[in-house]
View 1 (cartoon, rainbow, N blue to C red):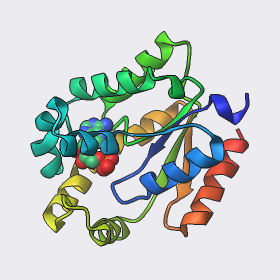
View 2 (view 1 turned 30 degrees about the horizontal axis):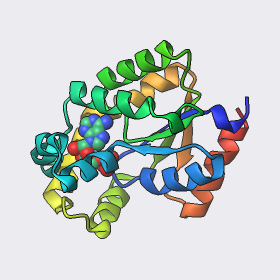
View 3 (view 1 turned 135 degrees about the vertical axis):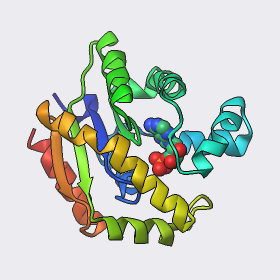
Length: 189
Ligand code: AMP
């Protein structure tokens, strides 16, 4: 199969560079980058019903509940630009979300092709997140998001590894090298 049909997940802690790599890989592979964080931030800034429901949870560095996220992702994956493949940035983040995604793809006779795991040491993550200066990025919120990641999301590494889908990438390399390493891994199968 060519790269156009690819369903790829980007996994990694907050600050690991998922968003940056999602944009770059999207351009290189010709599939949309779907960032649930960006979608939710947009909803908050537009003051939509969804935005009002998630604002407080996001500001605290916690996770939006799985059911609400299922609606958001199901809607987005059903859009025409996602039918030829996509890169998911920021979803799934819990075991329940991973199961939801499997169900959504299965219903469409699709499957996950690869899970790219960007590995970055914790102190680098915190430094990067603070340097980025997003309005929700005070030090205590940054630390809370790391804690939530370790507790809820990191277990997905083992899950996808056991399914033979995990591709480990050294995310502490310069941006261009990370992109190249990911593309090499994806091309290698
Ligand atoms: P991100 O930009 O991916 O770090 O996402 C920013 C915030 O949006 C997170 O800290 C969560 O509050 C929320 N969020 C994004 N994606 C998810 C998800 N898959 N599940 C739950 N909450 C999410």
